[in-house]
Every structure is written in structure tokens, then in C-alpha cells.
Amino acid sequence: MSWIPKVSGLVPVLCFLFALAACGGNADGQATGPAAADADGSIWVLSRADRSITIIDARQAAAVGRINLGFASDPGVMVYRDGTVWVGSSGGLVQRVDASTRTLIDSVELPMDVWWLSAAAHGVYAMDAELGLVTRHDLRTGEVLATYDPPDRIHAMAAGPETVAVHTGDRREVHFYAPGATESRVVTAEIGGGDMVLGFGSFWIYRPDGRLLRVDPDSAAIAAEIDMDADLYFPAIAIGDDAVWLTLVDTDELIRVDPAANQIVARIPVRGSPEAVAVHGDAAWVALPQDDAVVRIDAESGAETARVSVEWPVRVVAVP
Image (cartoon, rainbow, N blue to C red; front, side, top):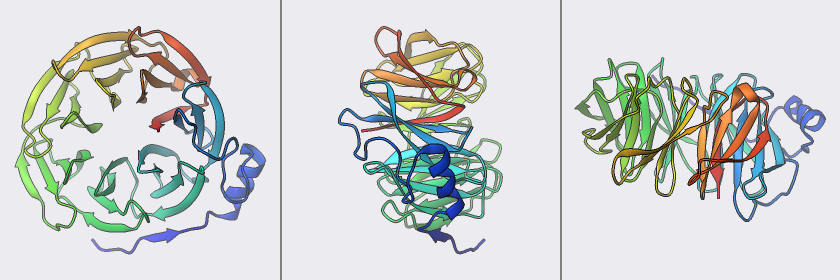
């Protein structure tokens, strides 16, 4: 499959008019609120209700800005890397926002739905599971540097230290692509599907039968299995300073896993069908789409310490 991506530095005029009317932005795609990043970091929340990003001051737990993205279809994934927030949509659009100025940088149009984004030092990777495509993007420009086309549907994808790992087929093959390579190194392994993230020197991925797997990012060997004691229906996974965090929608729980011991150390009730989660300092931020809110959970006590209204939040990332 060959194609030429279209990179646009301008967002359609209608998107900006909508931003002016509904979000308080300006004609440069600037968010409302302070122009500079907050000293103590911020939490960026992707809303599917109006296809915007709400920026929350992490210390004050208050909304301080909003960016209208102008997507024609629903955005569903978001990742932060090296000063830039990347957002992808089911309509094949990736938009990049400067995290410091909170200004829309540009848009990259792709001939595929963007199901997932993963970032590493060697690039940002976008994935379409149904088409079985992965694109590698330059961190500075957003340019598509390579397209990977494994031979089957994709179940999971994540960028590792020096490669991108793509889990394909009947969950029995992992294809490792080096940044400059056109051919993959294939490892036979059945590791699961859904969110796969890198942390503590391993990939972390769930299996629907209730197991969280710790996977070697170079060999796909399973280093540890952690029983969640619950079916895992598309849980979100986030990496903190000293723990791996998961949300369990069916049981209304936030799970804290100690990576040193490979075991659960806390099960925190969070009502409202918790979905996306991000970790900032000593707190986990959890999206509650049913409650139209994002809550801050103290990592040690498990207590809810703040709640911010955001309509239909679907993704949360921490920006330092």
C-alpha cells in the first residue's frame, strides 16, 4: 500500500469560527486561559462531546483552558511527547498541539482510522486495527516517515525503546519494526489485546480473561502475570513513578500494581464507570464519562481529592 500523507498547517476557517463562538479561542487556535504551561503541570482531557481538550491545572484542580480541535469525526486517542500533545480521530486525522503555548500546530490527514497512538524517542506511531496499518511520524514535524503493514488485523501496538511492537493475527504473532526498517522481526506469542504501554522496562497489556501481563519489549516473552480477579473489558493502563494503574469499568475500580513485586497493592472504588487514567505526581486522574467529570485520586489514601466537570471525557494525559 502506498500513499502520500497530506500535512496541513491551517485548520479550516469554520473550525476557528466555532472555537471563537463556543470555546473562547482565538483565530490562531490558541486556547483560553494562561498561554504558558502551568508550573506544577497540567492534565489534558479529551472530550468527545464537543471534540475539544480541557486543560486542568494539576495543583489547583481547576480548568484553566480549552482548545477546540475542529474534528469532523470523533477523536478518541491522545498522547504526549516532548512538548507536543497528539490527538487522533476515527476520521483519519491527527492533530498536534504545542503544550507550552496551547496552540494548534498542524493537522496530518491519514487514509485510515486512528485507533491508537504511542510515542517514543524514535517517533509517534498511529494504528488502525481493522486495516492493519501503523504509521510512524516525526516528533518535530508530524511528517509520516514510514508505513508498516503487517499481514493481519492488529490487536495491540506500542512503541518500545528502539522498536515498535505490533500484535497481530489471532493474538499469536508480535511484529517488531525498527524505526528505519521495512521488514519486521516476528515472534510467536499470544499476549492479549487493547491498551499496551511501556513502563518499568516492560510492556503492560491485559487479557480479557482477567490477567495483566508484563511483557519483555524485545522478545515478547511474558515476565509476569497478575490476576485482576475480574474480567478486563478494555481497561485503561497508565504508568506512574512507582506503580502501574488500571481502570476496571465493570467493577468501578482503580487498580494500583506494584511493578517491583508484580502484584496488586490497592483496589480503589471509583463510581461512574472509570475509563481513561493518567498519573501526575502523587495522584491519579480518572475520566468518568457517565458523570461528565474527571476526578483526582490520592495515590496513597485512595481518596477523591477533586472533581472537575468535563463533558464526555474519553482520554486523559499528564503534561509536565
